[in-house]
Amino acid sequence: MGLTGAGKTTIGKALARRLGREFMDSDHVISDRTGVSVREIFEVEGEQGFRNREQAVICELATGKDRVLATGGGGILREATRECLKANCLVIYLYAKPEEIFKRIGHDHTRPMLDGNPLKRLQDLYQLRDPLYREVAHHVVETQGRSHQSLQDILAWLSTQGIQAMSPSSSPTPSSAPSLTPST
Ligand code: S3P
Image (cartoon, rainbow, N blue to C red):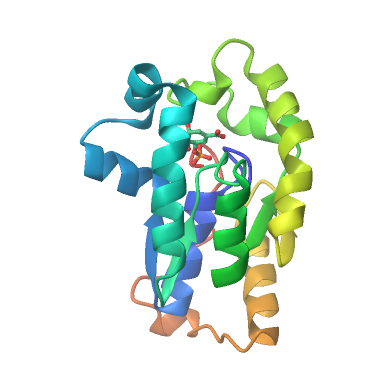
């Protein structure tokens, strides 16, 4: 979990490779099932329509086994969704300051929550959501410009929870330290 642009997709995919697990992204599942983009769902059904779909998908995916799940940045807005996550998953909050995220993704126009003034929107989202992410998270990781350190931090924490990674060489594809720009 974390704000849009915090690195959920980049780090989540790298983590899934190291754990030998499937990577899933709630936004992608919603888009695949509806056949339209998240932005189109916002336009047609409004934010609450999207949140209804998001709640159902996250609560479904959260009960699955052997996967790494990235949620949309607003997935923690509903209490019911927070409860599904907390009860069924080891939840990791990828923390990044809004100013840092703006540097990474301020140019990206695919994110409806950042329409208008993206930096101001990110600052507002941060104020509202940081406490919610912290409420749900079992672990908080500070993300920097590159994902390698965050990944190592997560793997170290997971090992304290009894979840061991494969060595980088035995992962299905080579583990890398991709830049967090411009992925989410
Ligand atoms: C949203 C974040 C997006 C997507 C939707 C709403 C939000 O996901 O779910 O545009 O409310 O912050 P990412 O966090 O993957 O960008």
